[in-house]
Length: 500
Image 1 (cartoon, rainbow, N blue to C red):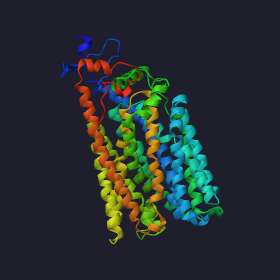
Image 2 (cartoon, one colour):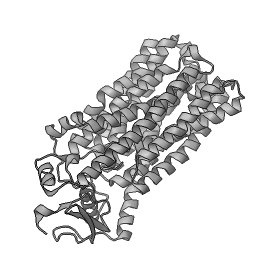
Image 3 (spheres, rainbow, N blue to C red):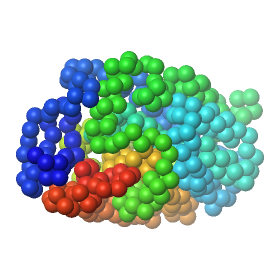
Image 4 (cartoon, one colour):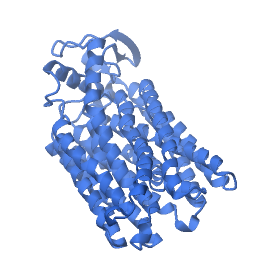
């Protein structure tokens, strides 16, 4: 078959088969790797390698995100400890203290991911971690609203690189259909953080007045210490890149790098590319990821900041509300992992995002409409909202990482998506106003509307991606040759197939 009469379509399974299109007819053939490639790994060998990666990488990433999420959201628990009263901060300034975290976060995410690419994740991630730990412990010394706002801004700056950095880091080790489940394990740490943070805050309640410190000051100090210790552990144990990590053998290194190349049909474009950097800002698909992310980020961020207060205003005491914020997160943790594992097994994103967001939307509609019911009924509605909100996040976050090709373009697009998506955090810090207490109907309605947008845009985007995949599949030989010419095509290459 002449090279001008064939085109290799995107290869989804590196161990079974490839698909070749000839005269627009698909035929399946047994895979025969070119002689210049390594010997393919057996299923047993591949399983062993993946487990080795999982046990080395995922616990560290999960602990980092657990620490990050506790430190960014513990201000909600601190408020119940009397933070607002002790530093005499107005309700409006308190809401801005919540929102300004995400402003610092948004401004520094892209620079952070580019620095990560230059000096390596094994150095940059620990540096960020110890920095936000120091900022967190310093928050115990704030005396007024201005001090709290400044501290939260710098907390956002120092935490800004973690989430986009982890998302990008996972793409350096795992194939596209393996990323959602792994992302769920580290993202579910946020639900564990909600549960653990509530229980920990309940215990710290009894330290109020110890050494003449308020309970909220002890909260900031105690929750910052593990972060600082974790940064030291991470510095010595987090692997860098597959090309130079020492915890894998040469054979394992070859297998990992080879399967990633096959998965993305990519070249060794690990150097910084200005062309790819600009492509991240001119690709309309990146803005679709951002739009869907913003719709989901508002409920995610507002839950972390306000769930204890929402439960408190259902009629429970502050101490009880701290403890009762744990079960919704625990249930959400289970469903977050299950949804993402299923999304990876099906190689699908749009339906999983839309279905989870729909469940969350129902929960918020219930919270907004059953204000006259018993606290137990409203608490169940809060569990439904929390479960759907967190379950839709990992497939949403890894949709772009799976569908953006090119080393520099991927790093930039992920940071751009997460960065602008965190504008949802700015909004989330404003929609639950003190004037709306005790039911916060306006905030619940806003979240329900945004989740409806997440459902709608996810389904629309899935349709558009499938349409593009079908178009590329049916290209003529001349069209294929024309579209495959050029350099730095990344995911625009006609061989690339989007995960929808």
